[in-house]
Image 1 (cartoon, rainbow, N blue to C red):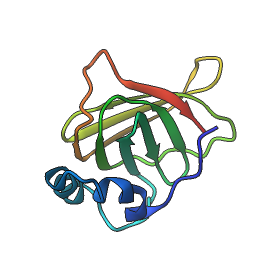
Image 2: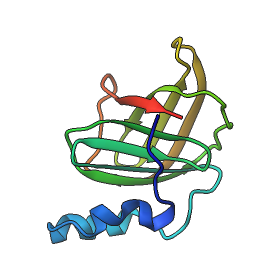
Image 3: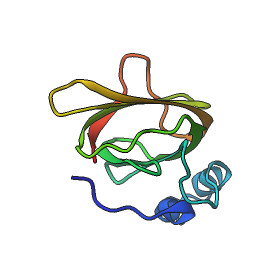
Image 4: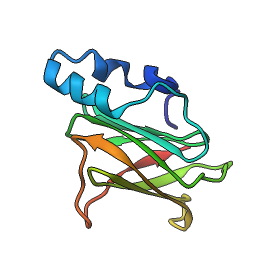
Length: 131
């Protein structure tokens, strides 16, 4: 089960206060001031953990990078159960697939926006658990 995460710009506080001033500046360019709304996807990674949040879903996974992303796309449905996720990121797009615990695809998010530091390949998405 994913830990509760802060909403809006507070979601990115640890990255905005990073000791690498250039990195913190790039994160600030990516993130907004608003809480997640239907169709928004916030992503951050720091200290070995990737966390994403939409208005209805939160997920966490292992990550060896540091970065942040803010995307706008289709709204996800509210799901009562959790499961696993796969998240693909380019500098300007995000694709998130939510699976139930048996591995069946439940929902897919596609959005545009921006991110820094978290680009994946077409065959190697970020993965973890969501609820």
